Amino acid sequence: MVRRVLGALLCLLPTLAHAGSRELEAGLENFWYRTAATPLNRDEILGLHRTEDLLRASLGWKESLGSARVVFKGFAERSFGSDPKTTWTTRQAYAQYSWAGASLRVGKQRVAWGSGFAWNPTNRLEPPKNPANTSLEQEGSWAVRLDAQPAPWAGLILVASQGDAGAGDLPFATGARKRNTGALRARFLAKDTDLALVMSGGERQPTLVGLDVGRSVGGVALHAESAVYEGSELAPARPDERFFRLVAGALWTRDTTSLSAEYFYNGEGYDAARAGAYLEGLDAAYASATNPALPASARDEALRRYLAGASIPFASGLGLRRHYLQASWSRGEIRGQWTASLRGVVGLSDGGVALTPGLAFSPRGNLTLSLDGVLLLGPDDSEYRLAPLRGAVQARVKALF
Amino acid sequence: MSSLLLCLLLAAPTAEAIVRQADRAVLGENATYTLRMTVERPGRAERVVEMRGWKKGDDLGLVRYTAPARERNTAYLRNGDSTWLYLPAGEKVVRVGPKQNFGGGDFSNGDIFRLSLIKDYDPTLVGEESLDGIPCYRLDLKAKDRSVAYDRVVYWVRRDGTFYPVRADYHTLSGKKLKSLAVSKIARVGSRERPTVLAMESALETGSRTTLEFLAIEDDVKMDDRIFTPSALEKGE
Image (cartoon, rainbow over the protein chains, first blue to last red):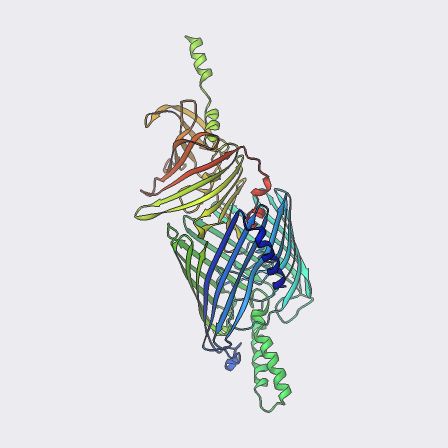
C-alpha cells in the first residue's frame, strides 16, 4: 500500500515541477525514555533496557498546484536499547483535489476530528493522541475522505479509513490492532455556534453517535465533544453495555499567552473495583506464568494472558479510568523565538499525574528546536505509574524551506 | 442668510455617511491583500509576520500567514461574530474570541477582520478639527452592544473629500483609553490611492505598537462564501 501511494506521488512530481507553492521540511527527533519494572512489566518481562531511545530523521514535502495538492511526511527511526532496529514510518502521504464546494483526499492522512484538545471521543479514525503531550506530530490513517459543502453554514464529510487503535511514540509494542472504520460528520454553523453530528462504525466496532459543540463566550472559546456507543473499546469486551464519553473545555488567549483546561469523562473507564480486579488478574496471571509447579503449556497460557492484560492501557481506548483533567499553559516571547509551556493531565480517579514542561526556541524564521520533558507521578497503582515508564525527554529540531 | 445655512447643512455629510465612506477607505467591499505585520515591544526586537488576506463584506474574513516559515499556514477566520484559529502543527481548528489579540500584536481579532465600524457603532458628528495639520471630522462612536472589542471610539476622518481615516482612539465604557490607531502613508496600491499603513499603539503599555502595512490589494474580487468556513480553513484552502 505504502509503495503504491509513494509511486503515485512520485509520478505526480514532474507534473508539479512548476507548482505554485512548495514547502519542504527536514527534522530530527529524539525520544528518550526511562523505564521501570511495574505491574505491567513484572520482573522487567518486557525486556526493556533501563533507558530506551528512539532517534528519528523526518522529511516532509507539500506541493500545491491550483486545486491539487500532494503531501508526504514520514521518518526513519533507529531504536537504541532492547531491540535495536531501523524502521520507516509514513505519517502522511496523500493527494487532494478540490473543486466547487467539495474536495477528495486519498492516502494516509490526518483527520483531526473533534474539538477536544487532548481527547476526541468522536474520532475512531486515527490513533488516539498522547494526552500528556499533544504537541507531538501524529501519524495519520490510510483513508479516503470526501468533503462536501453545499452551503457556507453546512458541510458533510465522509471517511473510510484503516488506522491503529492504540497510541504511538512508545518504546515497546502496544499490541494495538488495526481497525477499519467508516464515518460521517455533518457540521453546521448556526448562530455563531459550531455544531457537528458524527456517526461512525465498522469492523468489530459498534456504531458511535457523537455531538460536538463549540462557541465563544466573551474572550473564552468553549467546546464540548461527546459520544454514545454500545460495546467497549477497552478490554474486557462489554458488547451489551452502552457507554458515554464527554470532553468539555475552554481556551483563553491573550497576546502570546494561552491557557486551556479540559475535563474528560470516560464512561467505559474502570471504576475502583474494576481497576482493582484488573490488577489482581494481572498478578494472578503472572504468578501462574512463573509457577514451576504448573506444566509448561499452562505457564505459557498464563504468560499470554498477562501480556495481553498488560497491553490493555495502550492497545485501544482513550484512558483506563473514568475521570481526567487536563490543563495547559504556554507563553511565547514576542519575537516568537522562545516559547515555554506546561501541560498537566491528572487522573481524577486514581491521583496519577503526567506533567509535561516544554521549551521551544526558533533562532531563525525557518528553524525550531523544542524540548519536552514528561514526568509520571502519583500513587504506584495509578494509571500513569502503571506504565513501564518513569519519564521521557522528547527533543525535536525542524527546518522548513 | 437662512437659505445659505440650509445649503451648508444639506451639503455636510451625516455621521453615518462619513463612517461608511471611511470604512471603505483602505479595503473595498470584497478584496484580497498582502499584509506585513510588525509587532514592537519595549526593549525587545521586533517581530515581523507576512500574511495573505481575503475579505468579503463586513462579516467574512480570512488571513493566512506566509512568513516566517515556522508560522506558515497559521490562519485566522472570521465568519459573523465567530473567529477561529488554524494551527498547522496539530492540523487543528480552534475557536478564539473576537476581543483577543491578533497574532500577539496590539490589534484585536475584531480590528483585523472588521475594518468597518458602521455595523458595530452608532456615530455622532462632534465637530471639525485639525490633526497634524489635516482638517478632519471628529466623530464619537458608541458600541451598539458589548460584544465588540471597544465600548467607545473617538474617530478622526479627513475632511478633504477622501474620507480617509486619520486616527481612532479606543476607550472603555468608563472612558479609559486603551489604544490609539494612526492611519498613514497614502499610496497607490492596487487600483487606487488609499492609506496603506495602520499603526496601533497601546495606551496602557508605553512603547507597545503594532503596524500593519498593506503591500498589495486587489479590489472587487469574486469569492465563494465557502472559503470563509472552518471546513475550508482546516483543509488549507
